[in-house]
Image (tube, rainbow over all chains, first blue to last red; front, side, top):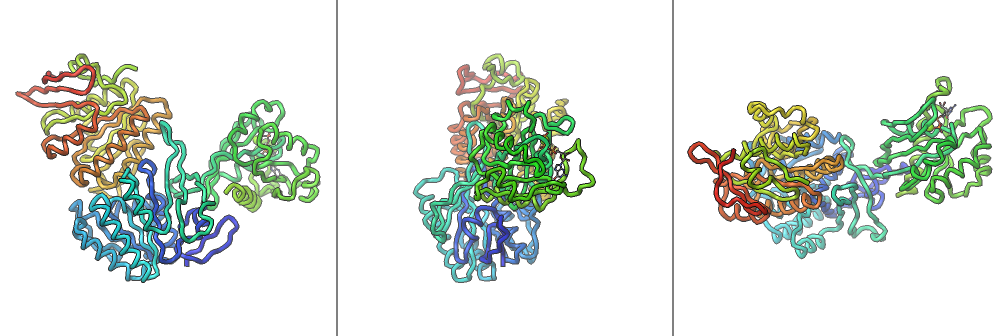
Length: 412
Length: 222
Ligand SMILES: Nc1nc2c(ncn2[C@@H]2O[C@H](COP(=O)(O)OP(=O)(O)OP(=O)(O)O)[C@@H](O)[C@H]2O)c(=O)[nH]1
Ligand SMILES: [Mg+2]
């Protein structure tokens, strides 16, 4: 059984799953007997969605069949591996590519060949026939290429046959589709035949500066209109990550903002002098299928003129305070105002809880006048003996993870 | 902005060069000198600080680089900086070929989505760097061989539309003898301007239509 552990760490047990944060939270996986269409703009593509769904399922014990006409099985597997999605024994490929290029592909236990991919009957019978072999999921990559090869009437009737097969074998199907600007009528018919459509698009002017997916339709979820669009990045290696472009990390001098950013991300950079931040910190965080860019402010008052600019376009805030310095708490609140992020989703981090004289969480809440709905998390240095007064220090991962979960949950 | 100089004196003087943001197709048979035209254009554009995305469909990136070297074109300083290759060929022979800093290995002629995604990514990187860009396709023949013409047409229409929005110049090289007249006609319809090359008695000639300074009779290319 595939399982999905969301930000809460809850396990669900419907399979197969997408393995993609947010999609699994919204749709609770792909129930048996359902067909999902992933429809992408040609400048964004959807192949990584395919790789990730396949990988999630084969590593959860679901047998997956890929109908492949876009490229050779070997280059498909190379591509998957580049995203850190290696194949295993649960992955089977029906090769409808080699027959087109004339380059011979050897059949193995895991790769079966469609000799003549131009032959509608062979394509149909091999796909439908294979579905009787205990696959929990079939992925068709690419379904739009089938429409290009044959025609829309064929792919529309083929969906009906896939649907019958999937229903009678308690399987499910994912169709990867690139929308090249086909006739609207044809695309509408296609959408009407599937149970769920996920759209993958770019936000573009002269260049693409963001990518998002959105659930256009899903017949097994009640509040389908609550499914808004989600920014993502396709990261190699790593795959699809739900993306938060800007989260601000602010708070008084020396509270541990830089320490927090360095502990939460692998690639943090700081503009620091004598241990104090003089411009900003930046780090990107990968956490449970999410990717966030953290921007840290300086804490010293002489840099206050920068704060407004640094806070611009942030969608959430980590407010860091030093648990031993309640006299700085008013300054902490002032910094929310100065960055103009007051009112955004916020998680308060009471750092340096390891030091003598650290206040208890409840007391900090009271002194900061925190609303009971606001999450407060205490964090500590990983190793007190290595704390260097001129360097950010590594914070214990439990606190960091709790803080990330708490804010990400508010942002999704 | 000045037009893009091709490095051929007669061509540049008579036509003014290639105009930004336009779609050009370059026709000719095997011996007509299409590659010579492209390579010289690459050299000339790179030295004018123009960035190039060079898409290969019937040779590998290493073959391309050795062709530049054998013609005495020093491409090395530009590799990965303003010259990037989309190699849609290598994986046909070596399926596990992988990317390097200047060549992205694509999945072969049927994966037009992959090609389109890569083009848009690399173009975006250059544009964010404030560089003018040319997309060169050397050549369309392999795409046309494995896909049906309507599919290729849709693909080209999409990427030309994006290129224009982004201010990118496009050039397709097409081998005339490999395709039926209706396929050639289709590509002409997508293009703003058409360049024809031919070899005659050991000399190369060009003509061009669709720009303000047309050259409608074959002129020597030198
Ligand atoms: N004991 C202890 N020391 C900490 C902790 N977190 C940070 N420090 C230390 O506190 C000092 C300040 O940490 P930074 O992360 O640089 O603080 P900052 O908020 O970025 O400071 P500015 O950029 O100057 O505003 C450094 O010497 C850290 O090593 C903690 O949890 N416990
Ligand atoms: Mg700092």
